[in-house]
Length: 349
Image 1 (tube, helix red, strand yellow):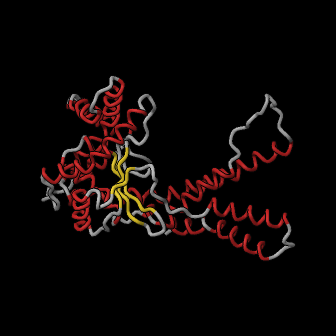
Image 2 (spheres, rainbow, N blue to C red; image 1 turned 90 degrees about the horizontal axis):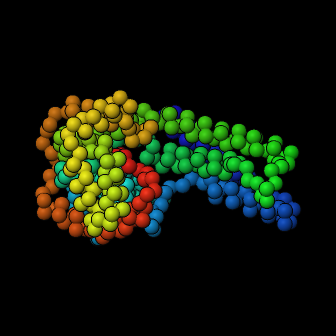
């Protein structure tokens, strides 16, 4: 309730700017200065307007026509969960996965990081899909159009207003009195928007973590308790995976995916136990909105084993892999070009 109210208030400055722009446009002397002011107000409104996300043309986005087996599997999972079918499945080079909405029509998009997908067995893949698709029904306020657009608006205000580092031209290190006065004022105003952003994130924290636990419980219903637990255990192996993959890329291995899986196969069981203990001690988690992974594993362990609601046979998963083959090739090319650069998004959502 509080987060929704704050999100609504966040859009008030944008509405005020829009109203001011309309008032100025229909009044005044209608000279050049008048229209410059109107253009400035309209431009600012465009910058801070609510954004609803969009599908990047640079992404590998699959539709039901291009990947019928994959979409048939996601549709079966959605039917069990009572979720809406997705419009696109986007694949990329992250050891991660996510679910979201894009556009004014709020079309649903599932994102699958092929590095993560490539190291999962069939049951774990169903568990991953179950968890992500459960975000459509788990009541996460952060996925709502009002709250998500408010968070983006606050971030935009901060970027626009914050003065950034001082830029010196031609070795001139002097600063005018006006600039010296304006910079701290702008920084203070920008930090005010940042403080509101952090306050909204704190209000959402309990809702977001509750939603993650509920998505985990729904994933257990879809797949199995064991598949969810082993899926989370592989979250601890992200750094090991990237180490093996980068080494394979540097030596020119022909199949990066096989190299990544092969490297993880060499990780001994006692190393996974050690990583699990370290995660418990350090509170390993995907980000601030997710509960610690070790607690999610403990939560999953408390559920009854049950019978999976969705089963996928080997022939179906082989068909899915054939549909993902073009994505594998494109993503592998991206990863080869990124060798040596730090990688982001290496954790499991």
